[in-house]
Figure: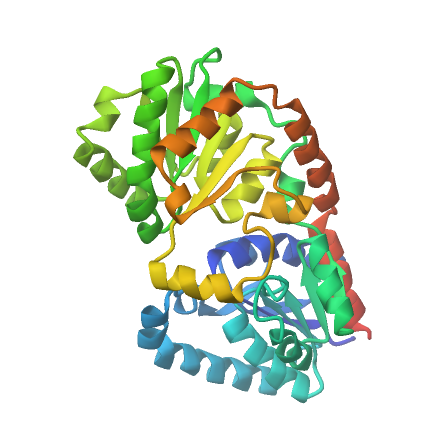
Length: 382
């Protein structure tokens, strides 16, 4: 009897767990007896993955938080490498979480194990020289966006564009009527979805100015409904508290707050106001005009002005290589500016923008799970 294939894998946060789950399922479909193990979350486990440690150990954001959790993280890394020394994988895949995964990949590559890094660090935007560290750690990088290819080719680092799982999951023509029925929204009502972010700091920073924007829009267009989806129960409580502080805005204005329905909220809407981040990609795939905003701490903003070299910071604009959506930073993030731009979308023909979103959706729709699994198989037998 032949020895089963062994694949090591680490996803360090929920987004990586979602991204890797389909790839794990595809690998198990091709190799039912394969042992796929390491660190992953519930989606990967449901697909047939064996997690040796709780993924929550690695799911830490922010410098201070990482420092306080560092002993636990280093202990997991040591134990993981010891396990892989005793049970060497035929190939290892690190999904995002570059601070942890690139170190693991480098150690395993030094032992002659082929390694893959799935999700390119943002070397195309800042700190390009990190690519040398990536090259020492990974035999191949799997990337989500086609514009990343150029920088990897520049340094002769093997790169495979696999597309984005979100582009596979979202319909080319999302069903607005079905989404509105799910959320109990009047089919005829014009709707603005408002997404102030998924982290506490983002919501604290952005929701107050987003609420001022809602007030401004409502004063001019009282027919527009406002939909605020909360990422989880913690953000729901936070949003409710901020609405109460804003003169009980939820009672005074046509605002509906929901939990865990961001994609439905986007599809149900006509226009979106949101915090910049991966949500801008999701909004683009949902084919909704949007205004993206972000507020950075003043010192962080000054540092990023010096380091950040990409021409745009939202994914739709980066993918299009031109400003197809408004992206606002710092002093541009004010109620008058945002309400004017949002009302312009409500009162304009947005068909050309939607067509551009659709073209970009097709570019990213590459059956990412199968394409990523194919790349893993190639490294298995390289």
